[in-house]
Length: 606
Image (tube, rainbow, N blue to C red):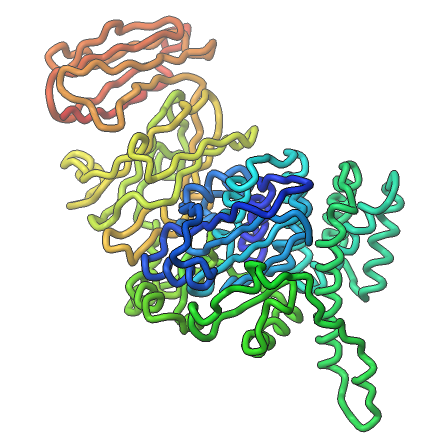
């Protein structure tokens, strides 16, 4: 479970890797981003917290699709989630490094944001990241990306984006073994030494890792050591300028060292000998100016019980420090990554508007729950999670059809379910080729590719159901000949109409497709076929054992075929004349005239 959930956390850096970079940028345009799934009252609370309510600032709305666009190439879509709640306020500067303050972000720390942005190439910037209730924070990070791009208009180097992603993967993986605090220390310190070095070799990297691990009294597993080694090797091959990154990286180093000192001091028994007093504490000095956006937040706007964190302690009031110290100490000692796609009211003693919105978004009467990796990582303790055990997938190769191959060339998937309260959700369907790893993903809320409609009497009869709905998913590419595929559905592929239920994710083991070496397809429009329509497709023989094919049901009263016999690949044109259900059947024969197989395609004419 840790590894699966961790993938969401890894995705954070993927967001940040796209942040544009400039070496010098004059203080100027400030940009706010707001999560699209917040209520109007919650957005106003965020603006009050940022200290910009009523100001004429550029404001961007961050949708879940924005997150999918930025993260989809790096992590499975089912782990990105389906809602965006967190927000950001970004102020590019011309000095001071990267300064960050967060509110209600459960696992994305200010230091993590700062050091990750530095690896992406950002040099100087102030960032506020917040939510009206506790979330993981990935939505805020997408907002940071988009806000910074809007402000400076410059893209990062693509290679450094990938390295930044790799850094977050490495840090979060190591964190599962030794905790977030120590993982941040060893990655940041090792990275600093590599960037400062000249012509760093693989042997140098091994020495750096050994020295830092020994200094921190850290024992790394072979897997973690290899991940860190690979990351540092990639970093060593880039032209990072330590002078540009120095302010941010050394600040992060000071912060994590200071936290470690605090933790160690807490473990040293205090007695009359004064041994605990020997622990050095880092002075609370600040580089923040009085007009810094970090110094002008209205912390009361988010209510009580809020978790605050900052790269500069001066941005935290005494009250704020008192509220968060216990949580920060616990996270530093035992970091457990927990991310999901809704929220709990347990820690959300926020303003009345936020609490009301959260209550409306959840159903306290449901008994089944899911902790699903997601954009804003909020704990889904109140949503009904619907099992897909009763769903029927087609085409499918399984025990039910004797593990037989299906026709090559298919470009439509169907998902049938004996419920009437489900609609297409914000999740997705992914079809992956087992041989080469290529895949295609269809968003379930793309109405040009997906429909959900009541099943016909004939469809219900075949399954022995009295009622049910069927989703049709139009693929971007047809299924290739003689190939094996597995199909996965993300969480939220379907949702209940009342918004309090969501389907579970599938892992692909239950929906596998083996295609034959030959076949045919009809390119039916997703909106359906009407009487009089001509549908086109392809006959696929492709040099297989099938040397010719014959369309068997050439009843001109129902359908008219432009051509009914094929000895090579060719185009199929079929005109449907009558409403109702029609089955197009094609038989394939070998050179001896022996029937190899007959494949059929059901068409409902409206």
